[in-house]
Length: 124
Image 1 (tube, rainbow, N blue to C red):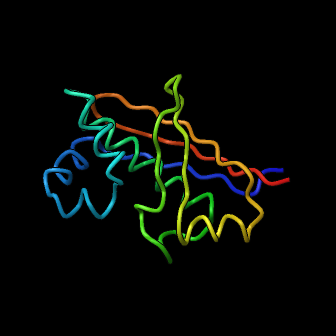
Image 2 (image 1 turned 90 degrees about the vertical axis):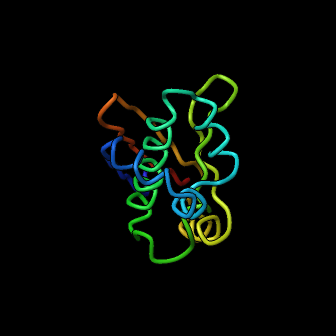
């Protein structure tokens, strides 16, 4: 059963400008996400932007916005085949458990100008 859906779109240039500030990067992304995005070379800005949109989509699927927890408690990394996976810790892991969320599906996409994400939360 679907318990929540969310989507978001961001301008890559705005996120690119924001990730130039270490304070923004450490407030929004986990060390593993930072390492992954920076490993993408010229596409680093697009990777950061897609993950930012993904985190926003997750918050929208929860239906809460960022009322509790921090963005670093939502981690989006690729699996062995490159498919993005959502990991939740802290506040958001607890909140997901309370809502009965069993699986968080996420899809990320980007162009030079925009990055977008869609999230679906599934419960039994």
